[in-house]
Amino acid sequence: MESPLPFEQSVTLFIHIFITLAMLCIGMSATLREMSAAVLEREKLTHLLAANVFIPPVIAILIIGIFPLPRPVSAVLFLLAVAPGGINAVQFSTKAPGQVSAAGALLVLLSIIGLVLAPSAAQVVLPTAALERVAWDQLVIRIVGVIGIPLLLGILIRRFYPDVAEHIYKPAMLISTVSFIASVVASISIRQEAAVGLGPSSLIAILVFILSLMALGWFLGGENKEYRQVLATCTNLRNVGLVYLLVDACCFDPAYSASVLAFMMLMVPINLVFTIACAVARKRHSQSGSDDRGSNT
Image (tube, rainbow, N blue to C red; front, side, top):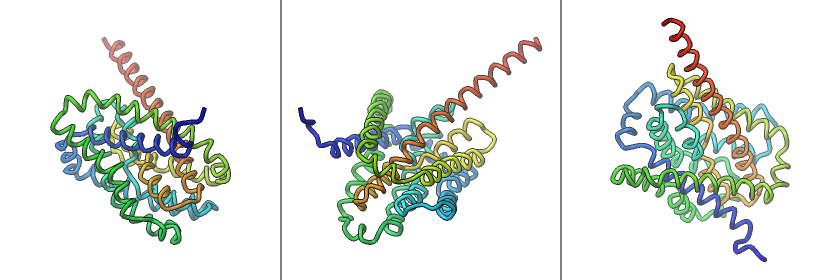
């Protein structure tokens, strides 16, 4: 029996569902007041912009200069560097105790910044021949429809219908996560040759990029360990959805989408391990504190 959707179309459908629902959840994860508070905290805002906007492109340029990378990997790495607001970040950053609203506010702000920076950078780093074939009006409509409108809709739902937001947040996030897993599994078989063709140096460069951004966010997160976890997560989880839409529309070379796939495959297990490690460290610290109080009584 034939599949009702061609395989490539089914992968694209999974990715679009994943991106759309993730952006909806990001919009619902913070109120307008919480976003305003995040902007008004000057020190935190300065560290946020440094970690997510100003320093990542410098790190990407250094990595591109050090590692012998093919052009698709270099282009994708730089686009990821200028595309903050990782759509997977909401699944990890909100696990830090007491930081749900802060994480949501940061992700909304970073997503808006990424919508401005990444398409502009794409016109510089992507091949000229590919850019000439792009119908930019259709691409803008696609980006706004898949990323901008769900983000705005999530903000409005949280603002005017908070009870609805509370009820649909977890199901939407679950469907988004399942769609993400399905897209990765399907994409592995579709782009297997392209992914293998990236070579070990490309995978190592992407790994170094992820770990460098995670360390940067942790370092600039301040004294609050929970907020450091949030910033470390938000910083290294870039907006793969936006970058995917850009390279998918502009480049017919599968190595570009394979590079985005490679980043996606590496960032999830790394952040899962990081989140679990933070949770274990908090639990041990809490238990040692309880033991100390018990011995003093």
